[in-house]
Image 1 (cartoon, helix red, strand yellow):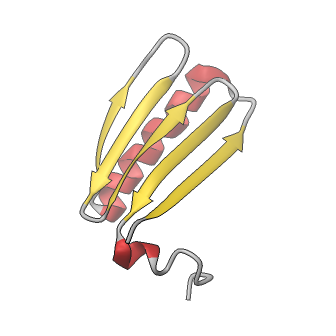
Image 2 (image 1 turned 180 degrees about the vertical axis):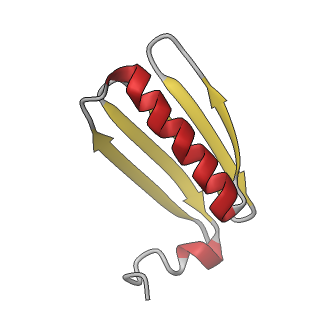
Image 3 (image 1 turned 90 degrees about the vertical axis):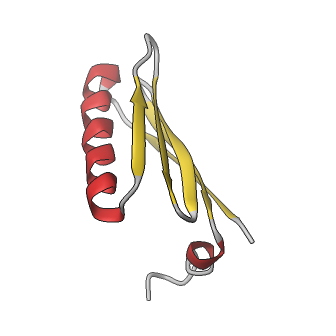
Length: 85
């Protein structure tokens, strides 16, 4: 069983500042959750890919929004809607 997670967050940072936020996020999920992240810079958008046992996805970094798509394996997906308890 796989759960799909999609989150879009608007911002007014521009690409340069959004890149700093995304790089910090990637460092934090690597340290806190054992994710393997790769960061690819582009002219108009960047892409963070992340993976760990049971989770994989991407974070698009654009001048006006972030867009996260992830696939959660069964164990993590079972808790997705539990309200954090």
